[in-house]
Image 1 (cartoon, protein in one colour):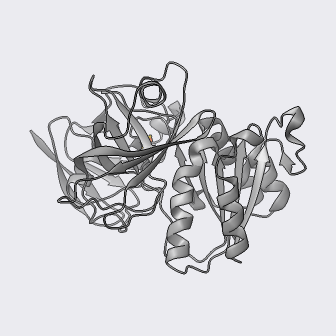
Image 2 (image 1 turned 180 degrees about the vertical axis):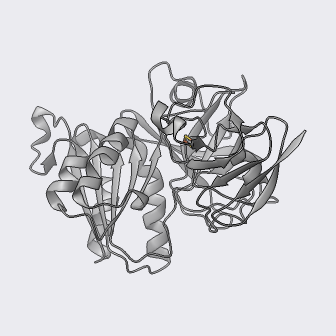
Amino acid sequence: MSFSVHNRKTGSRFDVEGDETILDAGLKHSIVFPYSCRGGTCGTCKARLVSGEVGYAHPPQALSPEELAGGSVLLCQAVPSGDVEIEATELAASAEIQIKIMPCRVAAMEQLAHDVMVLHLKLPASQAFRYLAGQYIDILMRDGRRRSFSMASRPQAGQDLELHVRHVPEGAFSSRVFDSMKVKDLMRFQGPFGTFFLREDSDRPAILMAGGTGLAPIKALLDQAFADDNHRQFHLFWGVRARRDLYLHELLETWAAEHENFRYTPVLSEPAADDDWRGESGFVHEVVLKHVDDLSAHEVYACGPPVMIDAAKAQFPAHGLAPDRLFYDSFEFAVDD
Ligand code: FES
């Protein structure tokens, strides 16, 4: 059974088949709505249901009962039960990019901190893989589960993909990476996913806020911006617990010295006694506001744990940030099939 989806905001129309979500059906037709987790938790894909009915396999966590009653819909979860009309933003930037399942081989592994491994994945020379800096892939595990990781490298033909894997105790994939993975191991992944890429139609100064390995997609955004000779102002605030967690501190300091449009502020939440830390400390979102109290001229790109993203969503609008200029990726969610 198929139904039609009409986006009143843009005029686009496409069909959804069976129990497809509106987001998945749109992607199949190269219609890209803003999205991140694909699991119903982050709220990036929120839109308005103008007419028709949709169902949800699980309660749509990112919608409050008031939003649900007021006609909001989560496009990554909503399955139409008839023809529907929606009002949703669409993004042109990634419309040409195909989501694929690809094999890859571990080309190198580098442990840069006590709990962070950098993986370099080699792709088959015969298959092109296109993505935008800031997007992520799902590693497909043998038992059917998936784990999401952002590419930390900008897209370049023939280049390995770089992923930053934090060791999560009992974490199915990260434990494998730290305990038994070897160079030349084979894996499969699906992607690219997500719309956490730099909005090219803006020249507003960008605040980049990363928590832990949430640095990965932000490193890719910056690397791409430098390669494109993009002259926007970028200020990165990178929050970690202690000095030993700043696993790419020297690289970021080098970038700050080389690019006059880039500033870098590391933030420690719990500096160790022997860190001898004289830099910023506390919650990273509070340090952002200490440096930039008025966010009305800025865009913010935030990637890190949900608690950091929620703090930005709750506090930045009161400092002038328009909600549609906050782009975020909550990286701790994995979609298990
Ligand atoms: Fe739909 Fe996160 S809630 S993409």
